[in-house]
Length: 219
Ligand code: DX5
Ligand code: ZN
Image (tube, rainbow, N blue to C red; front, side, top):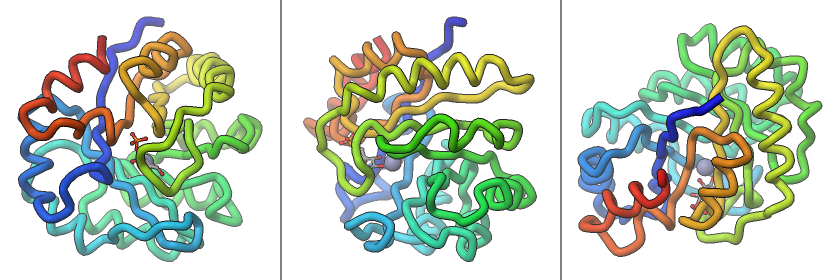
């Protein structure tokens, strides 16, 4: 079915010394969500920020916060991210010993639940938890860094997940994250993605290009 394309800029590519200003600028430029990449230096080989920074950013935009948790174990921290102002909490299939229980916990906290699949993860990992999922995130790079190259083998996974998502009785967003450029955006949209998470492609060129960059991604 035709989907309207939404853009979630990843602030990993923003100016970390001016995050409040950056999220205001991308809101004004037409972003749909703010994508927040939380990394722990353990689940992924990089460190970013945690709930204190997210809480500090919360008053600076009305846009929903899409909180991508690349941390393990993830369960002990779900309350902290909910309290910090996350609207959607996305966890990786292998960051919890009991994915179903973790997704139940996110829903019990009153948040939308997202589940992320690494490039090596299989569709079967989420097949039996779909009733708890509001957004599937397909990693089109290995998680941990911005600016990596798109892994094109993920396109068939995106397509199969669109088919699976459309079979559910509730609506499920299908997001892609990593290496999304003006060229790869077309490929993932054609495969069935309806949320584009992009860092480099949105923030390149500075503030005056944000609106144009997002427009190009959507088209
Ligand atoms: C990578 C992150 C991505 C990253 C994407 O682990 O999850 O959100 O910021 O960056 P680009 O768009 O530069 O590939
Ligand atoms: Zn991300």
